[in-house]
Length: 281
Ligand code: ACO
Ligand code: V55
Image (cartoon, rainbow, N blue to C red; front, side, top):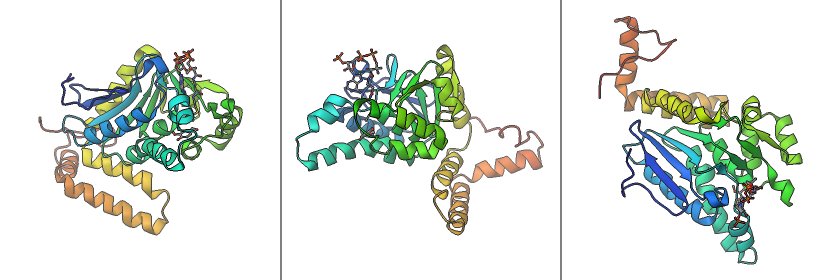
């Protein structure tokens, strides 16, 4: 585990890189339930930017310290303290949020996993949905609490939900502000799985290791292909998805070679049931 000074750092975030090439990126304002203030938004962007280029890192896990994932936007520092400032300030503050909450994360060059360890409200749904995969503790608490304090969901909260969960569930929780637990979040596919709190970290590591066992170029191409092609015409998608397919072969020729050779010639594995063996790095 490296915790040296060459890791991205900040007052409101924490980063660890472990021996499995997993970067653990924490919301780290436990005394404020990891609410996102402007400082946190800037530090998250900088940390994600640094980890994207860091060869020690193959997967990023986004989670929170203490008993919270994130309590959403900071009502004091993000909203109240920007009230009355020039519109341009509000615009900049909002942009610093969206820069990492979806723009950076949606296009992130490495696989990302949200590990929802506790409270997850409002604005926290944007980075949650923007991560490629999500696991939650069964006893985590989620809510679109905006209506409870007198606003509609802002940023991409609603758009991200429309991308992820069924309309009936989205409408119910957006309109009522009722909270729900991790098991319910898994039932409506907001997260991939909910597991007991004491198994959450190990399950996340297992999932991350599955991703790191595959060609990173192939995983990246597969992810971007799904993200972008759904908004394209079939014609554009055909061209784009073949471009991603051929790009992955170009960037990692060995993966496909080994994949075919070990199945067709060596008969040492079956791709339907698992991946080929990589030579020791
Ligand atoms: N913004 C600003 N401060 C917050 C936030 C937030 N979103 N969430 C928690 N805090 C602060 C509290 O003001 C309190 O600060 P203080 O100690 O200086 O008084 C501290 O964090 C602890 O909060 P408590 O409410 O005492 O913690 P508790 O564990 O009892 O409850 C819970 C946790 C349920 C998360 C509660 O804090 C809460 O409801 N927070 C707001 C959740 C929310 O609606 N977020 C906004 C979503 S909408 C959007 O993001 C746009
Ligand atoms: C919300 C979230 C935001 C924001 C404004 O409704 C409102 C939540 C994630 O950022 O900028």
